[in-house]
Amino acid sequence: MNMTKTIAALTSAVLLTGTLASCGSRNSKHERVQQTEISFSWWGNDSRNRYTIEAIEKFEELHPEIKVDVSYSEWSGYETRNKVWLASDTECDVMQINYGWLTNYSEDGSGYYDINELADTVKLDNFEEDLLEYGRKNGKLNALPIAMNAQTVYINKTIYDSYGLGVPATWDDLFAAAKVMSADGVYPISAASKSLWMYLITYAEQTAGKKILAEDGSLNFSAEDLRTMIEFYKRLVDEKVLPQAEYYERIKLDSEEYAGSVAWVSDANNYFGAEIEKGREIVTAPYTTITGSGAGEGWYAKPATMYAVSKNTEHPEEAALLLDFLLNSTEMAEIQGLEKGIPLSKSAQNAIQDQMTGLQFEASEEMNGAELTQLSPVLEDGGLIDDFFAAANEVLYDKADSGEAALNLYTQISADYF
Image 1 (cartoon, rainbow, N blue to C red):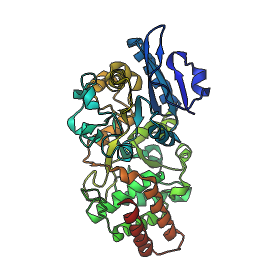
Image 2: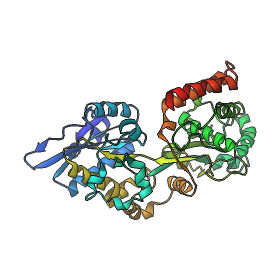
Image 3: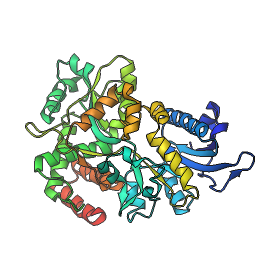
């Protein structure tokens, strides 16, 4: 559902039913009150939409000279609309963007406004320099990260306890759990396709002792390394450690057919909120390793999401005020809490010390305590992930042996992605 409404006119009914399709005009002035109008877009569920609208209302109270038009929707379809907006120069003045979009839409740094030019308003000193690097393209600061994100292993400890099993830390632990749980139709772990793809990369990197990508971004895995991933995936499916990617259903976490899941830090509450409400003990497990390997080896981190300013904005100062409010203000920090992870802004962190509890905080702490590699956007390419599982299915359904499937996959992705 995509809506653009003036914040002051929004009610809960409008939140659920209103529709519109564009980020809106930047030149509009309300002559009666002499307000400058800017626009802001994001994606999220109903809960995120509500608290973001509440925050924007607070911003308008603090800055009565500025009116903010909003455009928001669920993730599905958001990127498609974003492509249209960018192609037609109708994107919002301030926008939530995905980390990978910096590569897709601003490889040379010209796709978004250079936030360095707004440094008099946006308090960049709230961010460590290495964190700002995530938003730089060709020397230009195109975006600012809101929080960091990483794939994390979540375990329903209540289920594991019922089988007399400890929280798994190694791949061997998961296979041992499957031998016990599979008789009851319970999987020890689960993962949606992107998370599963990253999970398999973790195992292959630990096995091969090298990264899937070289420092220059080229493919560092051989066909044999891809074969390792395919064969391990088949073993995980065959031995009932996790469901096949195409048959993963998140609702089965609630029905307790899955005793755990690999998911982003930012998804902790969305994935496990219902179980926690039922009194189940959900914990973060150590990053899965081969017995004896280092903690965090083969695992990756990235900005959860980012904020950027349109290169076409006609109101950069007002956009900068909104950007600073979203990232650094006490008001936004208190309203948002840890919903997007631990904020990276120092002032935002200081404002919500009393909220640093719960599953998402624990997942963030697990992430911050490990040596994780910066995730390259190419590894999140949907086409690449689909190509891998298509090749793996050739093996799962006995249409090709693993060596043949891996070689074909290596040839294909080398040509298409690297």
